[in-house]
Figure 1 (cartoon, each protein chain N blue to C red):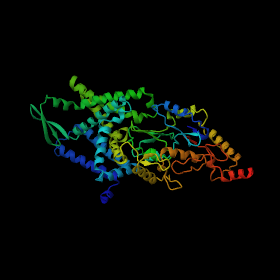
Figure 2 (spheres, rainbow over the protein chains, first blue to last red):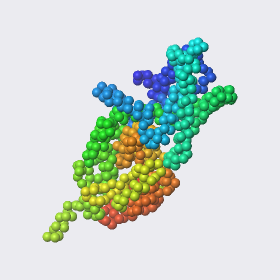
Figure 3 (cartoon, one colour):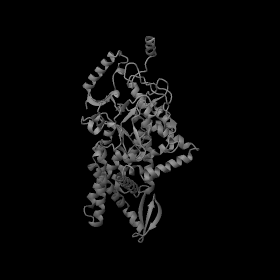
Figure 4 (cartoon, each protein chain N blue to C red):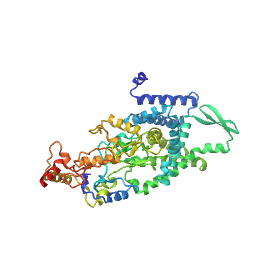
Length: 380
Length: 180
């Protein structure tokens, strides 16, 4: 493996090469040794290749980050453990259903945002799946006899159907359904961006708005194509097809490098229940100072490792790390340090001495013993 | 932006007006992002206000596995981007000052962003604009330097003498974002 790696410029280029090989192989199978290539969609094919290479390179770059690397390392380690098998499967199923399929956490931010994201996400996913399937010829329809249509997946004949049947209607119009979903979601999202002043605090036109308008261009031009051949007898069909192809090409090339890249990295949310929930919904690690539970051992070990790799020296004089304390105690340590009190770190429950001889009680050093002794001698 | 946040913890009277103001800030969704806490409730009623330092190299962003915490060009460290945050809470444990908060329901982290919509136009953040005892102030860099100098003089009056090694211990905390 290492020798193979060395023959490439980098890991990213190696994985990109592998991805391109796989895509070519699938294309080769699906098009019957390139004999059934659809040259009209060559723009789609080239941009799809760029899409997959871009995704690969971005994921590689993202995995190099020490934080991501550490989390993935622990995830892989836990995945291999047989004793954690039940927990791993549960974590994966939970994330897949709650987090990715139903997107429950977005609905909790408001039903409007939830619905909007649900429409855009599933519209996008379905459209992407259908587009890639058609572009790479992974599936297409074939006429067996005048009354029977057949879906062919990777050159393997599968189900047959009547050309006017319900199944046929669904599969012809799948892209239309997904684009209508997308259109509804996009209108909701754009009107939210226009009307909701809260979103304007941190939104950036090129990051938050550009993908929305780009998706809108793709959706509308795609729906206009349907309108053209269904109801207008093919009026302006070929120029519209070119416009649609151009927008899709821009979308596919943009996808790995913009906001939409959050889609392929979402599955990493599995690592949270898989690695960091010793007990569901409860913390297990006690704070070094106050004893309240605030996290779990694995996660704090990971955080220390990540910070150490990036030369963050957060170790204290007594050998403990700042991440050994709960957030509330860390805030207190900061205040005491800044107030010239050297943050007395004592055992759990011990009071902080804030009375010194100079400052008003509340913030200050403990009075020196000699101060009291002097008073006693004066009185006597 | 040539202004800084200037905190004097002793001046805090514990009225929590800053927290109430924080809840009103745009995009904060009715949840406060700053803290007012007792130093030690069993000993005195002294409280202190606490907000994000806006580090130039923030530990929270470094420990984020999803690369969700972004820094604006002015240097303000923003809350985790909602679409990227996977809800692992690494930021709350990585932050040396215990600042980021986490919303388990909505699965996202939120933290003090110095009221970015206000401070980017040099308007005082909500907490500083309401603080009745000037524990939190949003002031010019020069004014901050002047206050620090006066503070050092006060320490000298009290019989404590800073040396070159520990002079930083004799001034209150200041932070924020400023350019030259």
